[in-house]
Structure formats: structure tokens, C-alpha cells
Image 1 (tube, rainbow, N blue to C red):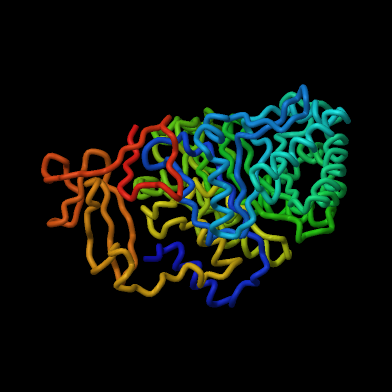
Image 2: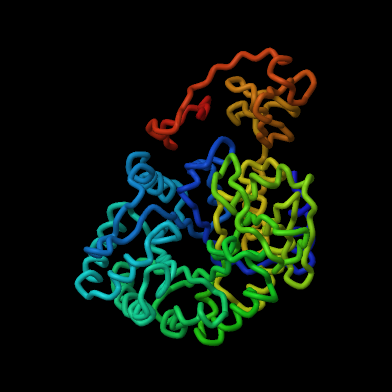
Length: 469
């Protein structure tokens, strides 16, 4: 069942014709989403690789500023819970390009600064990087330095960053690795002082052009994540990087799928109005100023939703909370800009922030918009139902999971759509609705898994697996 947003996109898609098939669609997977709670917890089996040409792991990997070594900074997640081996299997089973990220918001900018400034540390960085790539069988690396000269960095970072990339390009060419760099694409003077754009573009395969900044909720005014026009606009960014870099096919337009939240200072809801800082932590993601689109969309009907016609982005507010987010209309506007400027593709940032369960419509609804605009949408067509399909959908209707009464699914012409009742409710097949637990007879038989226990993988994951806190 297509959501209204996706239906809107398909209508536009049919009007303008088929998109070219050579655009790249990078899907950033924030492995830290493993730490979210309950239904927002994201696992590798939630990834739909049909939506991507490249999967980019991030983060949990940084740089040792004292030695220059590539360092796993979240060993619990990547090593003890076997996340890196999962990347192996994803690549093996789906023949996709799988990359990983060094850096990100949680890594220290000063560590990059120390490494880039020292020839011996750079050499050690290159050696350990190659070892890491071959050990875990990655096809490429994204350098996400937040940001040169900032957050503990030094003024020399701008020059040293180029020196690092110039040398790293030689290493990547020798081993046939993909080299991508994530940059803040804003066009204000202070941001542009971080990057030597012509040289940076020269030494990499792709530039992940971000427009959101984790510092925004602390700037004390309401801000859009990625407005098409106006302050910090995507249009001005694309124009500048295209003009100075002279390689539009290297530019990858970042689409922030997450929701950025603020606490309003007064009842003024227009962008730029004063705020008190980031929105409160939610019970699921537990990060101030942040929530996933999948977390918010279930309650969207209780918010006042608006669309800024100039900036081409939606925003919403409820009580004293104000949010910036993306929807099908805003993403489609960005995809039109991308195609009209012959950019290289888009980056879905991040796929774990999407409505990947499909609780508000189609699963991965925002990612589907990107694919519809840039790729071959026919790959999402459901397969023809057969009588040998493991019995998952033998007939049409709504059915409760045998091992978890909180879960249920709909079968429609051989296609299965999964749902989940709210906490404290079970699905009642006779009423075809979620009812309080006390009113529903429930016999459950499932295998439980708790955080801290070894992760299951594609080869040994039980069908009746139940994740509990």
C-alpha cells in the first residue's frame, strides 16, 4: 500500500518520465542506532539494499591522534556484536559496494588534526586503513572530519586536509578503493574557510554534500535541516561547489531523513525565530534535539504541519516543540535540483531514521522517494505470489504473530505488511484491532534476545526472535 506521499511522487515520476539509471544512491547506516530503544532499534536485517547502489557504514571508527592508526572506537558494537562481519555478509549476499566511515560527530576533530599534520602519522594512517579495508572487505571509505580548523582543530587543518587527501588518493587508486569525503556544504564565510574546494574535489571520487549541522539546535534560533533556498540553502551550495569544483558528477546531495527538534522561546513558529535550544529527549532515541522520522510520523496527526513554499521544506510544531524534517515533496524538489545540475547522486542520511517498519505507509518511505526519482522503481514491485512461499501469506486478511501477540501482519495478494500494537496492547484477530492485553487471550512462543547478548546473523537468526529490554 503506497502512502499519499509516495503516490504524489509516482504521479510526478510518470509525468516527467523515467530517470536515468546511472545516478548513485548512497545509504548511510548509523550503526549507533543499535542503541535506540524498542521499535526504533535498527538492525542490519532492516536494511533494504534494493534502495541503494552503495551502503556506507558509520560510525564507530576514528583516528588515534597520537599514532595515526585507524581505530575502532566502539568495540562493543562493531567487534563484540559482530557488526563488521555483518557487513561481509551483506556484500556477499547482495553484490553491492559496501563502504565505511572514519570520523563523524562523535569522533574528535583534534585527532584528525594531529594525524594530518604529521607525515609519519599519515603514513601509519594509510597502512592501517589498507589493513582494515582488506580485513573487513570494504570497497571504500568516507572521511567525515567534523570539521577542519574547528572543535579542537588548528588553522593549518585546511592545508593539511588537502595534503592528506592528495596522498590518500594515490593509496585508494592503487588498491581500487572508493574515496568519499563528507563536508558541510553551507556557503557562509566561516564554513568556506575550512575547505579548499577546487583541490578537495580533485583528490576524491565523491563529496557527500551535507547541509545539516549537529550544532544547529544550540544556535538559539529555529533552523531548517536543508532548505532549498534562503539561509544555508542547498541551491547556493550546489551552485558554489559545482562552480569551484568543476566536477558535478562527484557531488552527492545529502538528504537528512532524521527529525531535528527545538524548544520554542515564544509562540513564533517561523524559521529564524528564537528558541531555548534542542528539543527534549524522546523515550526511543534519547538524544536531545533529535528523533527518527519513523518515531515521529506515527504521531504526526497531532502536530500542526506547515510547508515553506520558498524553502521547499516542511516543518511542524506542537506545544513548545518545533521540528524540521523532510517529506516526499521536499525530497522530490531536491531530486529535481540534483538532476538538473547533473550531480552524481544522493545520500540517504541515515536509513535507520526512515520509517523502515512501514508504520506510517510503505516501509522505508523516504528512501523510496529517492529511488523513485533516481533509480529503477520496478525493483520494488512485489513478486508474484506462489503456493510455495513458506506459507507466510496463504490467504488475504489480518493475522497475529504466533510468537508475539503484540505483532500482526496483513496479507494482500501474496504480499505481507507487518504492524505492531502499542505497548500494553495485543492484536485481537476476531476484532481486527489492537486491544488492551487483559482483553485478549494470548499464547506466545518466542526466542528472546536482550542487549548485551551476542547478535544473531543472517545464517542463524530464529524466525520467532523477540527483542526485549
